[in-house]
Image 1: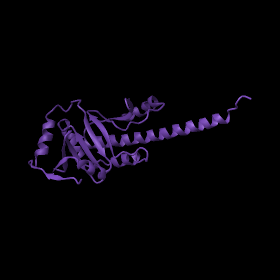
Image 2: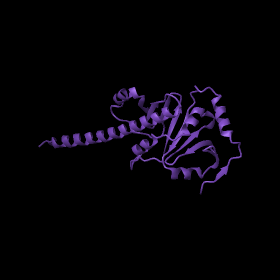
Image 3: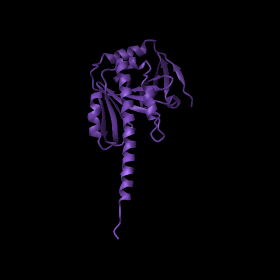
Image 4: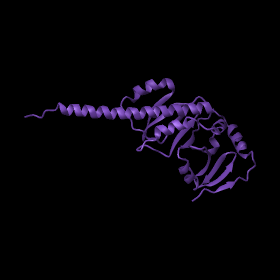
Length: 216
């Protein structure tokens, strides 16, 4: 089903008014905002077809049974935010502009066995954390975290695997762009570590078997 774009009946400043309402809250709240980063625009269009869509001020307001979402499309990716009432004003204003580091993140994730159309992040004051990558835990994670600590990166163990967390200085465009760049570098490191672990395990197994002499 094709996406149906409904012209907004709100005034031209309605989104700004709602953003301003969000801003009136204490920006230091620890409430987490979910940000879905859609790396496949075509797949994103299929997703929006399930919702009532209103277009306003370069944003899309998606309304469905689950609730409301704000979305913003660019040529190579789209962002989707929820819950609307918790979104800080500065975050919305920053996401009005294309994040150049998203291209790097897409390049890192373009692996046949690991490709995802979208990645979800939890954003709160001071930190952004992936929530659905479900990376495998690996030996030496604490040692790696000690090295990455200076860059504000950390592989954190959750119930369903390991996720990547990054310090977020603010909700400004530059801080968001830098955070996603660091996350892409952290994921690149993870895939390299995984490959090296597999190579070392295979080589050690082969060397061990070459020395294995069964009893006569």
